[in-house]
Length: 350
Ligand SMILES: [Mg+2]
Image 1 (cartoon, rainbow, N blue to C red):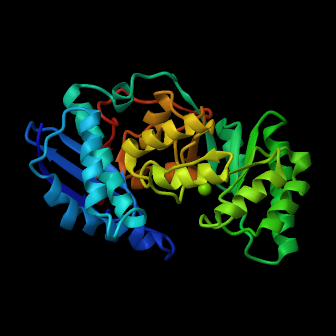
Image 2: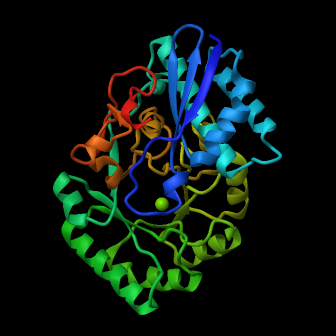
Image 3: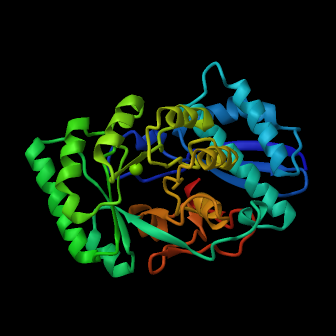
């Protein structure tokens, strides 16, 4: 089939507070084909990546044909090469991610298959989900047995530590001894604070600390990792393409990689990252893996049996951008039967 049109759209979100997300949150990409199949994808980069798709990628894609995953990868490589002078990471690769996912969606629909079947078939009937957010009690009541809390280092050091420890104690009591508990620092901790945390949380048996230092401090992460064992130092949601993960691998900087499938370069690049991770013996657990784009990757047997669910994104039904997206039930994500990624875009938000 041939690509007849490509369009990126910034949805009409109703962000409650002004942040970078106001204009630079997720985009929708629509790919039309000459066989009547329409593919939908989801990328990052907001109004910037909408421009990248509509003013650059579109003219390179219209008229091109693709009939298998390898041909999607060929188109991916051509777009990557075309945007090299301003790309390689950030908004350009977030835009490319949206295009890539739309092509996979179209391929699945054209073949009468789900994306996980294009990846070799469903190997996990359901995927264990973990709840990211600050409402531990609600997640416990919903049936989760894995939970991650964001604990920033942005106030008085002693107060930040006290808050973290009080969450850890409460969460361990709520969820019991078997549950997975994780902390996300969102790039706000210093290395010595992380070491102090690692010591202090020993009684609560945390599984990992995530996104601890700023992503360019690869050597810092590598050194930290050795100092806080057996606590895992994980991250990678702010990395783009397999090239970035090669640097992380070389520095042995992270115990687990968390590429975001809608940012790192789409499914095509997530598969390349997964192959590298496999060769390096590093587990992969995608950022926001419980959303439908990651859920197909995980259901097909890639990565760990662990899907991140940002519970804020799943909570408000009437504002859902993707209709038919699987919801976490009793702590698991299960794919629906729909072709491609199996979701419809909420046209009212476009
Ligand atoms: Mg995170």
